[in-house]
Image (cartoon, rainbow over all chains, first blue to last red; front, side, top):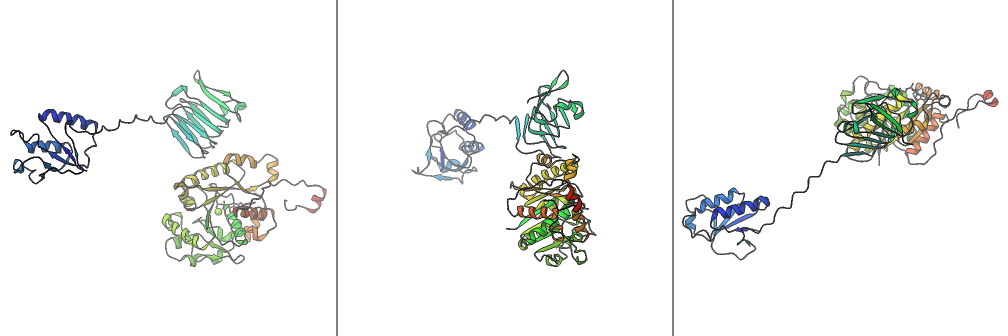
Length: 224
Length: 273
Ligand SMILES: Nc1ncnc2c1ncn2[C@@H]1O[C@H](COP(=O)(O)OP(=O)(O)OP(=O)(O)O)[C@@H](O)[C@H]1O
Ligand SMILES: [Mg+2]
């Protein structure tokens, strides 16, 4: 369906209003044929109709025809070949008068969805695999194998046996914690502070454990 | 519907080749059309274990490279006529295989057989990757010791990410075959327990094959153990595993160390019930 635009005098004000609307509804004219109705501006001898059409085109409008003007007014310009609709077609075209254009505003920009700050791994982490998630916490449902590693920006939760290595707090630092339902890890690390298996008490192995940073060292406590 | 099944392990020497032969023969004995493909290019073994080493003319590499037709390379077993073997090349290396070439051969085998069993080489490199690439399911052969279990875990991760099925987001069936299980050593705490292995690997158990010299004896005479000594404990374990692959629900008994009572000592060892 073609759209009809009806420029009005004074042109500067009309364009200003048009630009404002276009700013809010940028895609409105995309791929829609436009007919320029010049009836209200053509009486003014001083108006450069070709320049007016240029200005419309510059705004991304695809001009397919003019109406309400004399063919002679455009002869010698690049617009002279444009179809001149002599009489008003009472067809499906939308006539836009009064207001510059009755065009709906673009829907408001959706709020940017913040990146998910947790990662859920719903399967075992196998030997040789490494899960790296710098933007937040990692939760694993299943075991983390010997020779596997989980690295998180925040805390790490393992609902399963932790046999591999876990490195927490890459971004959040000392606040991060490590939880697992059965400790059998090779190495655990929070904010760069690490312990290997021989450094913690044997009594924690095989149990549900929480690990946190406390006065510069890793503190283990049982949860079960 | 034909099935392509890779027999794999990560770690070498855990018994993939005797397991491929025994499972293949057991499936074929039930009337299924079976081919076992040796993917261990450069270290071919399967032909020996199957007793076909004197009949190899063309091999997998010849077929992949288009130098021989599949029918020319397939060797029909002399004992079970629904069992065939596609041997590997001993003189080439794994680089002689290409992904497209392997796909073509597997597609062709799918049309001829109910089961295409791929005996994978050890490791996680190209040969092992190609053996699993087009599989529908896997038998993960594991010995009850930590290094074998960890390598199996690694291979399971790859089955879940590097196979065509996994890449297409389809489910990839994996079965654990625990081999060389010694009840006596398990009782002494010298080996991982079955529950421990299952807990670590978290895949369903297909069977437990006990440590038995019958396996070596069978390999030495070039015969799958299920054909060579069908009543032996490993043969029975493999035959039950094959029935489970065919969908039967059978309980899996953990082999137990026999108490050598007075009668037992008199009559020597009996097959484990
Ligand atoms: N259940 C068993 N009892 C006793 N010995 C066994 C058993 N299963 C396998 N073996 C022996 O273990 C050895 C290793 O087997 P083999 O080399 O065929 O394994 P593989 O996994 O195919 O090795 P590769 O990785 O080199 O292909 C062989 O000598 C074989 O006879
Ligand atoms: Mg082998």
